[in-house]
Amino acid sequence: MSAQHEAGVATTHRVVILGAGYAGLSAAIQLACRVKPSENVRVTLVNAQERFTERLRLHMAASGQPLAELSIPELLEGTGAHFERGWVTAVDANAKTVRIDDERVLPYDTLVYALGGVADTSAVPGAEDHAHTLNGAQDAEVLADRLARLGSGTVVVVGSGLTGVESAAEIAERHPELTVVLLGRGEPGAAMHPKARAYLRAALDRLGVRVRSGVEVVKVLPGSVELAGIVDVAGRVDVAGSVDLAGTGGPVGEESVAADVVLWTSGTRVSPLAAAAGLTVDEGGRIVTDTALRSVSHPEVYAVGDAAAIRQGYGVMHGTCQGGMPTGVHAAVSILRKLRGRRPRPFRFGYYHTPVSLGRHDAVVQFTHPDDSPRRLHLTGRVAVRYKETVTAAPWATWGRMKKMPASGAFWPRGGRFTRVGGAR
Image 1: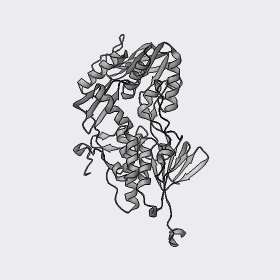
Image 2 (image 1 turned 90 degrees about the horizontal axis):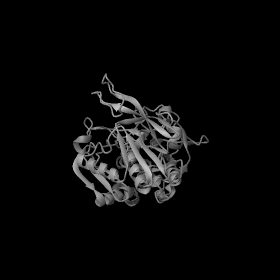
Image 3 (image 1 turned 180 degrees about the horizontal axis):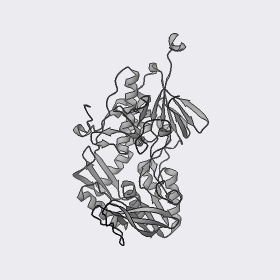
Image 4 (image 1 turned 30 degrees about the vertical axis):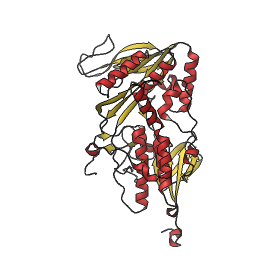
């Protein structure tokens, strides 16, 4: 027992939250607003910059539309949480310390790890050197400046997922003088209901986006990208000229596509800090958690958002804002329950929609089952645009309500039978 405890002096429980994205900021606000002064808990939020990255609007910034300057310290005002600016350069899980900017050492009793993912440009030669990304507002603004000075030419967007679709549509609408090509393994909107997927594809056609699915970028050069066709198990190939006679699947053939600008949205990777700290991680480097979102190897560490491999009844969650904010809130509630001598509850979350903007005047919203499979119901056109904007702006209203009524942050779809793992209720 410490001398402070023997003397009857309460010690401060130090909670450090790494990363101020949607999940990390939700954890900080929820915890700081719920904790009682008598509980002597200090909440510190660490982030590399003071500006909040509005990831849901980065495709807009990439096309030259300005984003609001949102200050993290201002978003924390009135909560009692402290803000520490700096890059996290190391985590020592045994000593329970975090190193910031290789200069400062921040000790913790409980750690919330919320360092989100970035575009994975490491797997393909040349992508790191020659492709733009949307990892933050500054990256998006650099791309917007490049597009504004281009005048004419071809912009290749690599990755046919939702980020790639939104970016291609936004750039095509904002810069009709440019040719926009969207490349990817899968068809855009592949996970949507066929009618919603057809609407999305028609919108891309209307905007002049040239879509190539069934291809893989294998190299990025200063003025082009090299493609390989994707062969399915039947031996079919998208790129003419080569056929996989064995029918084993994989990339074959080669083709070069001219590109004045390349935007990389294909795949994400997480920080290697968690693995380096000795935390148990999955094959993608995400921290493996228990049902309360604690690290399975270090229970004083909670992982949220893109940094966590969170298993639900339907499988491991994928990173989205709709799931990230609930993980941050749940981690905060779990920490408080533990400090108060109560058992944390299992985290459960069910997906409910996939909103996709198609420029400023069109959108499609696919409603989903809790396991993220598509329902028949979807919205299109102006109604979908209004819905998408409401969703994009929702974090500010949610955080504002949490400051006044902390318990309001703990409401989200639990997913029913889709999300149960073992005996979880």
